[in-house]
Length: 341
Image 1 (cartoon, helix red, strand yellow):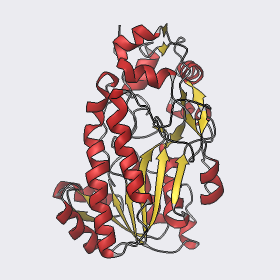
Image 2 (cartoon, rainbow, N blue to C red; image 1 turned 135 degrees about the horizontal axis):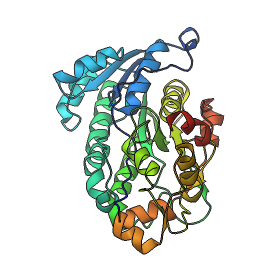
Image 3 (cartoon, rainbow, N blue to C red; image 1 turned 135 degrees about the vertical axis):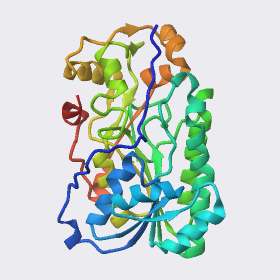
Image 4 (cartoon, rainbow, N blue to C red; image 1 turned 180 degrees about the vertical axis):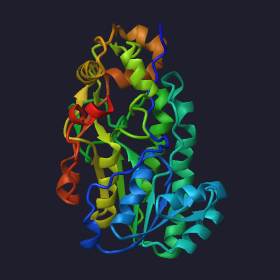
């Protein structure tokens, strides 16, 4: 049985960035914005959009080698290891931002058989790195703090198939996913309880598009093309997707217009695996995916892989559209994945 892997999203990309709202500069205020994680997949889409909007953007990078990449995006680089509190505070003091955007992750290919290990570095960043940024933000009087969270596979797996921001995260996670969800909960609680700033949490869906695991020619796409990505069980797990460019646009909206709280950043079309996977295979010109029972899926992809395939709940974007004035340019993965496929 071929191993099934899922790789959600934070890889770098050399693709040129297209800014969806080039006239934003003329109508939005200018702010000083510090982006941590500026050279990841979403950071590479976000930073040029903030610059285009007229904001003065600073990119927190870990070493001298990251400075040129940040500069190419249009940002002023400041150096700090996110896990070193004194370095983070020095970088934040140097940038003196009004807004901090935390996009810190360290996600590569996710082996669902070793899910906890795949997320260990990112979980540490969501706890220690985020706490360091918050401490520096408090010390320097940052007025708005926007943080990346996860709405793709963290919601409680009971009840309705589509969740709003008021619904709880998974209250009884399986063991391999428990530490990842605990780190998300830590980050969200820390940001939302910081009464000295305007804390905003963005729960992104599963990314696709340039720089992600669902990019043209990616390993995941090739697995689907070669029928090595089967539907497990009934394929009833509901996924909410978001194009990486739409995620960046929503983040700009949160920076400029967001109020304290949580926002699901997903498209309009949550869909079960049994629906989206065969349709994507058809876009790729491939045969329908194989179907395997849960016990075979567990052997190949582990318990986490079975949960992702059969038990996930999707998310609603109604609040983000209503309160941020944001609408995804790719309202459905059916449209957005066509050029990717």
